[in-house]
Figure 1 (cartoon, rainbow, N blue to C red):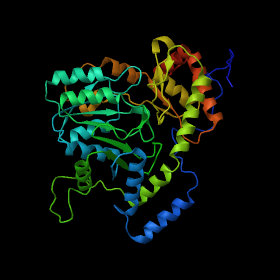
Figure 2: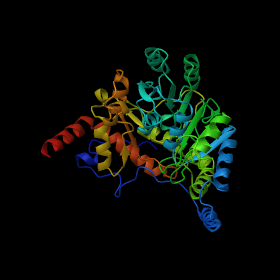
Figure 3: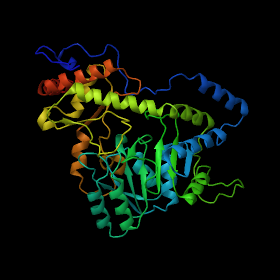
Figure 4: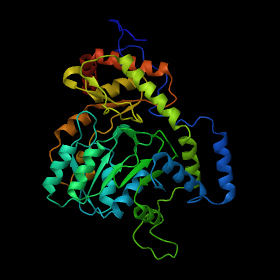
Length: 405
């Protein structure tokens, strides 16, 4: 069903009727029926083993089997997993990574003793651009100690080109796969690329644990180091071999993750249906698109992301986000500002990243969750379309309101 607009179909920002009476949240974790999960958690509580126990091992083994990798290590968060991986591989110098990603990607580099060196992302996919990453490595003239890339929004990176680049530079490649549990690159599950891939299980992800992370790797020695590192670097004799973290995953979080993982395949099917429905309902709008997948790739669609060309649409992503709020639709601007423009990294000298800055200003992600109804998605698409149909007026109204304030 395609929704046709009339001249009087005004967005809420211009006095029209909001799409939703109550605010539609950005995410709602999909856990379905939780009776068996509650029973498992009760057994865990009775056992007295609340961390690094058999449930964590079951989760690690289940995910390893799904991804086709020999080692998966459960940790307290994706951030702690990235920190421990970068420490373990000795990334204590320049590390090339995209600026268009969550700040934790750079925080982990800094914590491990490295220095972030930011590169551009590709125009189509919004993942690390191999050509600009190569330029950054060339500028470093052999001083780079690692490279990291992010499967942003669940869109797989150009893994082959990035691996060739890392191999040529003689450095390890690590993936921030926070959004990627369920994505695949040309038929291969995300999780087996680079020296390690690190997943997030936080509440905004498709598979959730409450809080938690997973590190997937083919490297047995790295996995052994990570298991030691998540427990302070203490092998049990209190003689810590290196400076580790308290990055253990609790049994209760692992139980939640196993339950959520059992729902992943149906969640992916549903998210793909919802994203296709959104774009079909929105229709062809000049200056509007989403991230583009390479042929054969599968995204988790952790986010439904709209990319705007403001010169064409007459409205910015920020203004669209505010107008969606008036419609009762929550949204986020992932990732604006990009990391190199954040205060935490103002002390570093950065390469020019004009494309990243433009794209960061151009993105907005409306609400999306796995158990959202078709009607809700249609109404979001309708709201976006009518806002865009009145882009210049919405922009002027927003500017006028800002001046009045």
